[in-house]
Length: 137
Image (cartoon, rainbow, N blue to C red; front, side):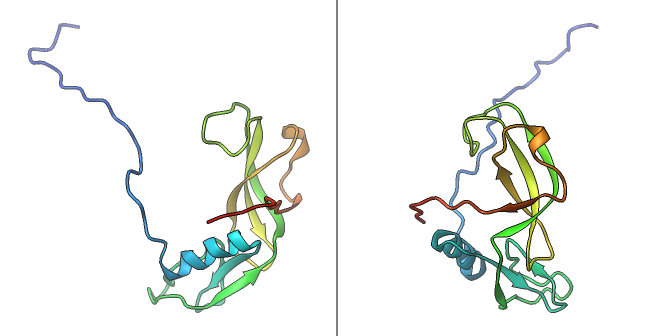
C-alpha cells in the first residue's frame, strides 16, 4: 500500500469525566441511603420500582417523586467474571460483575460480587449487600 499523499493527523485520546455532576434530589436520596446503609428506588406511574432510582417516568416524562425502600438482598439476574485486576476496580482480586434484582425492585442494579471463582456464582443465586463499617459521602 502506498504512503498517503497528505499527513495523517493524530491526537492522544483520554476518556475521562473531568467534571462534577450534581446528583439532584432523586439520586441524592440514593447516595445518602447508601451512606446510611439502606437502598432506595423510585416508583414510576405504572408501579415499576427502579434501582438505582430514575428521575423521570419513562412513559410520561414526568418527574418521579415517589422514592421507596427496597431490600439489601436480591437475586443475580446475570453475571460476568472479571479475572484480571485493573486499577479503580472494587477488589484487588478476581470477582464477578453482576446484575442484581433487589427484593422490592423491578430492575437490576450492576454491582461487584466477591466470590472465589466463577464456579461460586450463578444466575438465580441470592446475594446480600455487605456494608463497610465506616461509610462517607
